[in-house]
Image 1: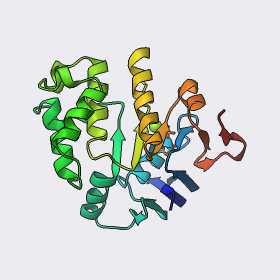
Image 2 (image 1 turned 45 degrees about the horizontal axis):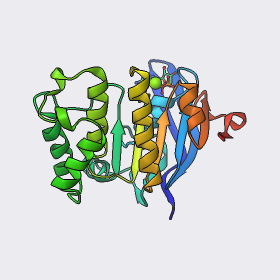
Image 3 (image 1 turned 90 degrees about the vertical axis):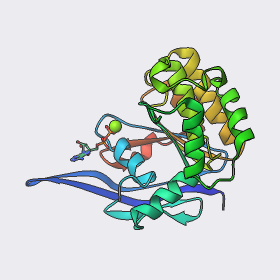
Length: 228
Ligand SMILES: Nc1ncnc2c1ncn2[C@@H]1O[C@H](COP(=O)(O)OP(=O)(O)O)[C@@H](O)[C@H]1O
Ligand SMILES: [Mg+2]
């Protein structure tokens, strides 16, 4: 199966008093190995909710998420966490690093939490590749914004995951670092990963293979385009 990430009819409702927000109203999507997909849409259209459901950090009220052939939805949190650790790399706008550990120790920790198939030499290569090897002994508080982003990418790639999810990965980055992060995500796709990027940045969307536009919790049928 080449669809590494699949969402089938995801629904998510939020209730506050008498108010009901229909954050996701039947969102289906699939990202295949080798593909980079951008998810765009106005503020409030459901992007963050979708990402949380795809990562198994939130449980949809209906529908199902499948990760590398395994169902992620409707499982105990411990099982979801184990699947996530081994199969999913997540890149947040804000740091995914543990504050009191060095960069290298953060990557090692992510490796231990994962399926344990990548080892020390993968770690060294990864730190080199992300351009953070020279700062691998530093703690997050000692890093610049660009360095933090590259260290965060190394953590996301610690287990060479088949699926990568990124939330506004270029949001607060300078142009050079943003390009580097995007190039590394593309490289993982070329190596066979499925990459999904939530973004407001039109340049990022244009650089993706495909754009999925959300509107009011639904996939906008007129907004689905293949980028050239
Ligand atoms: N925890 C929550 N409680 C209530 N409503 C929420 C919650 N999270 C999101 N929403 C609502 O769900 C809708 C989708 O939000 P969100 O997924 O954050 O959109 P986006 O990321 O595209 O801006 C919005 O109307 C938002 O106000
Ligand atoms: Mg959001």
